[in-house]
Length: 376
Image (cartoon, rainbow, N blue to C red; front, top):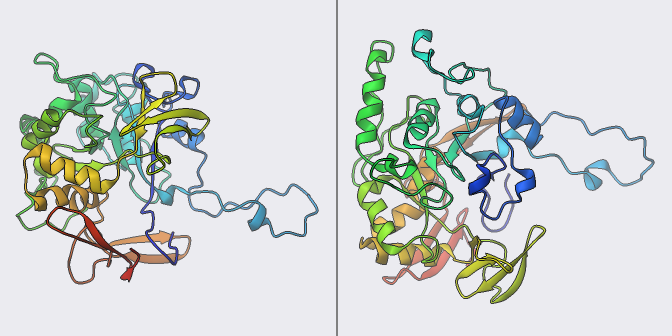
């Protein structure tokens, strides 16, 4: 939804409540759920409209104020870009397939060992695919591979709220290995005659970008978001992830509303958060509650931690996030009866959105343009 001044939100990232209880982080345990009925549970929990055509309830109240003032339109599925969930939960694989509009094309005989109907496909109520990210999870490496085959394409804040890497059970961190591509390519080989188009790969930053939709074929290695605030992830772990899969790195801040407000007690929903320097924790605990880092700080940290050049660091905060959403190319969206062509973002090219920043050699932000207008 467009506004006149400043930056716009590309869409919502719904992080929760489909989490492993032991990996819930700062989330309230009372609200943790499993998507036991797949997409139907997801729809029930989020309560979003499918097409924005729902009418306001007639409550027979006598008000002179227009209804749209007292009860604004509800968010719609069209506003959602990413959903984070734990893939090992009951019903999760089915939900992933429906959300991403992924259809398992293997013969039914291949699904004999799927548990509780997870190999079944279900019609999606959505008019556009949603990116599914794996996070807040106790998933194993095999769970991750299965989620990838059902359409998941992202890992939420790598290393945090997931099992650590182990040499006999690499967990989701192991999905950064090039070996994953070999496994998934092998799985896709029986489908080659049915799919004449080549499977896209995650391109190297210096190679031309293929013009493809992110949901046209099975994903290979996932993208992964990384909080490079110096608190959530050790610099060595940042470097390891980048070296393993540089084209998949997506920098995020995980910042809460107290960013920039200084030390002290602040609110995060109905919880109190203590801010001390760069660390945000639930009051009277050591549980991290997001961060207070800016994207500028994360890009600078990443350049230092990963030992990369400024260009590589900037790609992780611009082009790579755009690729996660399929927004590095123009996209056509329909809202009710209106068709809108959304320009590419995260790239500098003719026809792309004029959302730009100007930085110096130290990566200090000197200026920001939003929609072609100087905002800072």
